[in-house]
Length: 333
Ligand code: SF4
Image (cartoon, helix red, strand yellow):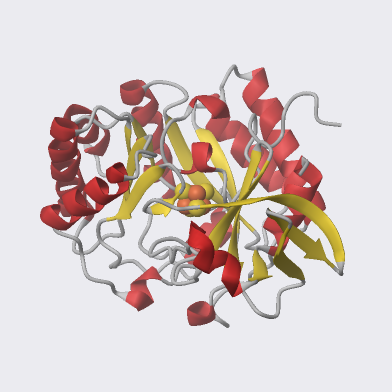
């Protein structure tokens, strides 16, 4: 598939898949963190592009087997041909674990505080990573976490897990948490290679409304410090698209982040039934996704940043987003 087709698939975000294809081995995954938490999904790969689609019987996309391939139909016409990709632990080629699937904060677009899952202890984390490693496909380990009790405690918990994993695996480890005043130093010293602190949005008014208790200035300060500690191309942030922000705000916000050496991940919002009515959400169109991804690619190019160098978390996965330098290359028409 080409990048326009991937943008269409990402904008729809779901598909009705023939159950027999899933039984054949690729299986499904249910994310326990982020706006897509709790929705069963699968990964489809075609050429250089990968997409994660949640399973919905009412989706306009149909996924079927055809002569050994997997095809995607849109309004009855084939638009992509490829294969299903197995997820190791959440996504292909990574053990991507959520340490605490619970949160004391209450971001209005996020189902995690409502799901209040049980935290994984170190033994369970090691067990899950070992299972992923046994496939022979594991290229990286990524850890994310809500905030079960306090950001400080969460950073310490995740850093302990990084230290333990470092002793066993010679693979890059990425961490995504809510930052603290010393989280970058702690995580780097523990052996993390990359870090992600999410701004969620760069629209101040939307941030104030949607993320009570969080501080955008503090997250930005923490990202700046993270670049000093981890280096350029090693620090990312999720920037949600579809909360009512304008494209000019996205561009200005992305520019500010890129100028700091941070790579924004422009993440299409996934409306969640547990948050129905609490927040304005509009999944971005394929055209908008493509336009914003090209804008971001140009900004990264202008500032010498490379989204294709990241080894952990979402940039190498690409399943949920239009990723610059992977889905949207320089020579893109
Ligand atoms: S892009 Fe990120 S959130 Fe989406 S499936 Fe991949 S690792 Fe998970």
